[in-house]
Image 1 (cartoon, protein in one colour):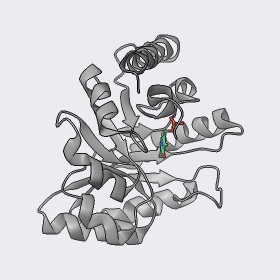
Image 2: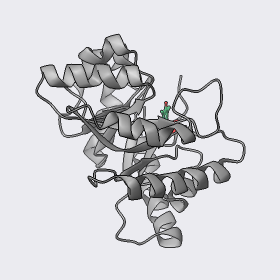
Image 3: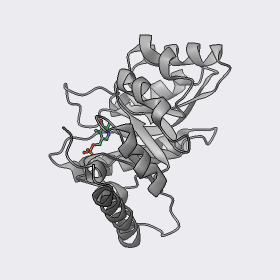
Image 4: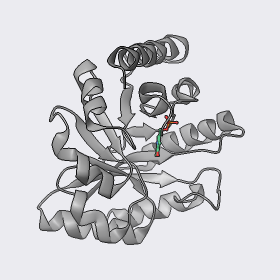
Length: 226
Ligand SMILES: *Cc1c(COP(=O)(O)O)cnc(C)c1O
């Protein structure tokens, strides 16, 4: 990809995040911008990192493993795609957060692999806020129990929630996620919950309006995917 176009795209995203903060939030709020790398060459990912992107989002285990050694080491890498339990072991040593925890089975497997590495693995719970059959994630009503359940795993630290709401009525779902986040946070005794990961290229300003503090951006940075 043309370096100038990529940098223009990044400038626009940084600008618009700031614009949304001015409109909807406190200017001191920290909103993390994650570049989503699926299908994107490592060389282009590195341009984004050199420009100032500090977080990378990975969707596919195989693709990530084939690219990770080509990445600049500066960025923080998090896993955001659907993750099969048997693949946890391939990524656990190199990702800071697994955002896409969508089952108790996966949670147990992450705890097991993290224990082997003597690591506390940070995770987010994925919430299927629109209750779509096509998407994974916990239902809103399940979350309180899931959170209680997760407390028994000593190598897991729950940091927050992630969601990919339906495009139809997205504002309503962002609102619901914002409420859920505040609710869960108030019930969480150990104060670890701090991340609300929502908002993508088409809607990140609206997500910021409803409390997101981590936006995951692919095409608005790297252009339409092949
Ligand atoms: C692809 C993807 C994104 C980014 O999507 P864009 O619309 O290209 O910004 C964000 N989150 C997840 C989980 C994704 O798979």
